[in-house]
Amino acid sequence: MTEPVGTTRNLQVAERLRQFADLLASQRANPFRVGAYRRAADTVAGLGRDVGDIHAEQGVAGLEALPGIGSSIAATIAELVRTGRSSQLERLRGSLDPEALFQTVPGIGPALARRIHDGLHVDTLEAFEATAHDGSLEALPGVGPRRAAMVRAALAGMLARTRPPRSASPGGQEPGVALLLDVDREYREGAEAGRLPTIAPRRFNPTGEAWLPVLHTERGSWHFSALFSNTARAHELGHTRDWVVIYFTTDGAQEGQRTVVTETAGVLAGRRVVRGLEAACREYYRSR
Image 1 (cartoon, rainbow, N blue to C red):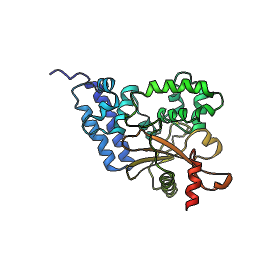
Image 2: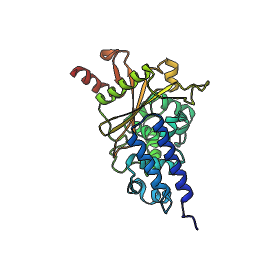
Image 3: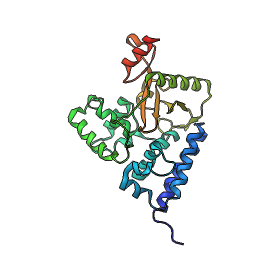
Image 4: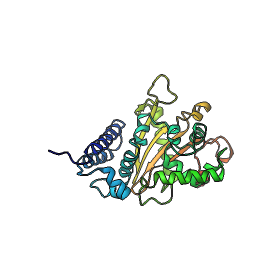
């Protein structure tokens, strides 16, 4: 019997989706989300044509049209097809290396990749693209408007067929500070009490210790994952148990991320604050 065209790649993508589902299950994520990845794996494995061809011809919209595949999983499949890897899967395994990832963007070398990771607190190309549009990137030393424009163009080309079609601007939708601060509270309380599963990050962890707690939680239609920051800067400043990176997604929006820290100066000193949303945090605490 002749094997259908594309079966090998389809089985590889399906295996990655099953690995994602197993990892989410081991980290006590919502069973419905775990089941969604397993159903998507079955769909991809059973396709009669190469999933890469579908993506090449129709983009993420073509993947979303497949049975049981929503926008978030479609974006994951698109990344797997485009790069052979999933930044979300690597992050939750503790093997993600954002600095190496950023160096895949033309014009970005090791030094700038580290400044981006440490200064902008992002670790995916999608989150990096958002900073290239909101002015944060060009404010970094050694970047400036011209270089930022070149990076925007490069990222647009790299991500054009990976981005969910209903996503608004780069960065997409995001939850309000009240939700982000509540997830931050849940994560820190769970980590302090030892209730959360832990992973062994590859970076800055020579002993291979499983020290990094992981939280998966939901608020309405939002899916959140939270981890303490494992950047070089967080280690240098001793903030690896203070800075919390929260990843979020919902139907129709690409994954976003924010970092929550304890403010050290000004009217918010001692308060938990979402970086980049300080004004909204001031209003949040004022209203309380």
